Picture 1 (cartoon, one colour):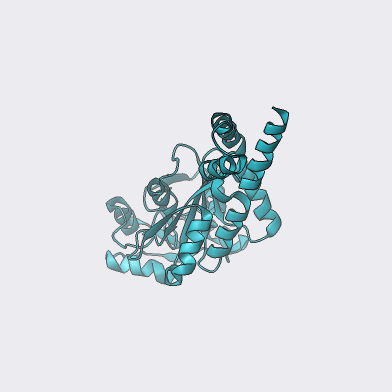
Picture 2 (spheres, rainbow, N blue to C red; picture 1 turned 45 degrees about the vertical axis):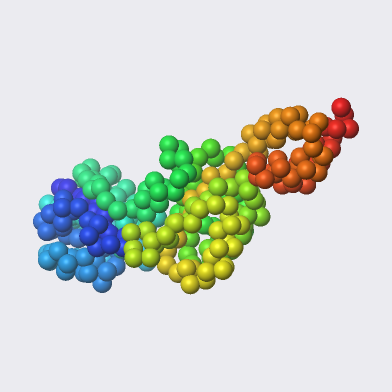
Length: 276
């Protein structure tokens, strides 16, 4: 038996592969996250599955066992999420894990995902990245994530809702300031697709001034510069400028370039001048 992981469009209904359409037409059983949304795609391409059932985050272990028992009697099955590639921030992984344990062949089909689409258009590093799903709602978890971001040498990809996008950008600004390089992707592949790039504070300010843009789905991409690396540059600049500018002016210039807090820089340079 073959079981297919079938990506669905994340906005533009044309973003589905010929192979996915062919597989959908031949499946014995199609598992979907949302039946009504699945029907929109299926209707567009004239697909009428023999069997279609729902599996989502409300489904129980018992529901999953029923699906597995049904699949055992068939020659093919597949799962299609509400939008994008199944198992990316959705509950399908439990089903896949059970099927793997039963030695059922899993066939992933390529297709739409806002994670990769936003990454490649962000302007941030693409050679090393991590995806963490939605930004944590619990403060303790958010603090833990901020520690991870400081240590992680790459781009972190985060989902966020329009209700929380401002609060999350504010949190990132408070934690990292100009040390954070951010891209916020909005409504990937849809009519109102947009990208906002800069520091958390800059993007937060822009969105607050353009509140009509705070709608739809957001992906936050962030790269935090390690302070240790920034201090190496800061110290080098201090030694080059110490004979030319005042301590205050050096601290201001270095802060703007490195993103390190100006007061923190000033205190560091003050200790240098006292010890020289």
